[in-house]
Image 1 (cartoon, helix red, strand yellow):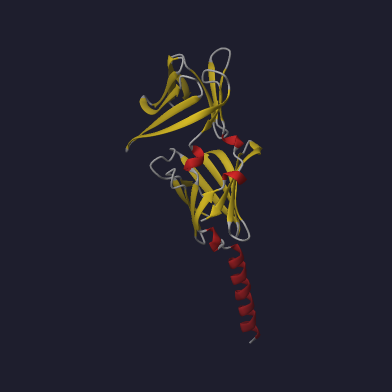
Image 2 (cartoon, one colour):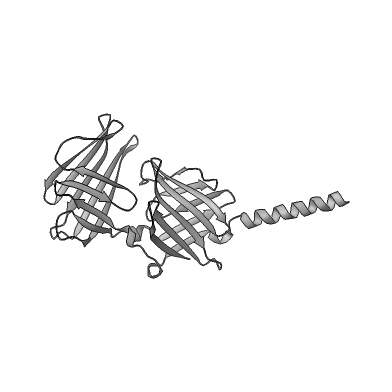
Length: 258
C-alpha cells in the first residue's frame, strides 16, 4: 500500500513538473505588431566608403567590405566577388564559387539621393530567387555612404503566426514568406520559404511556459540572439533581438493577439 501511494506521489509530481515546463497554449494564434510600443532603431543599415575607396556594409547582423574597381577579389573557400560601378548612382556586385555565379546584387540611388533600391538574386539549383529592398536615407548627404532604413521591413513583419506543441515550434511572417519549424532541443532548423536566405538556420529553446530563447545563424555563424516573452494574461508577445557582439543594442517588437 505504501509503495502504491509513493508511486502516485512520484507520478503526480512528474506530471506537475511537465505541465510547468510545457509551453502555454496562449502562444498559439495570429499576432499584430504594435509600432507605438516597439523599438527598432537597430534596423538601420550603414554603408561607408573609406578614403581609398573601400566600401563597408553593416546591417547589425552581418558586415563585409568590398572594392568597386571591376577586379575579382577572393573571399575564401574558392569564392570570389567583383564590383562594377555603372555610374555615380548604380553599382553591381557579383559573387562566384568555383567559377559559377551564386549571387548578384544591384544598388541604385534615386535622382535626389534619398532612396536606395537594392535588388539581390540568389542562383540556386531550383532557379534564381530575387528579392528587393527599398531603403530611405537616415544620414549622409550624397552617394551610397550613410545610414539607411528598409521602409518595407515593418510591413513584412506586421503579422506573426505561432504554433507551439510540447516539443516543436512553428513561426512565420505571412507577409514576408520565410517560416521555420524548430524543435525545442536547441538543434538548428533551416529557415524555409521561397525567399528564405540560403544557409539561414533558427534555434529555439523553451525556458519556461512563457519564454523562448532564439538564435539565428547564417552558414553556421551567429547573426542574432533573441527572446520571445508571453505576457501573463496572454495578450502580448515581446520579441527582442540583438547582435551577440553588441548585446546592449537591442531591437524590440511588441505583438498583440488578434
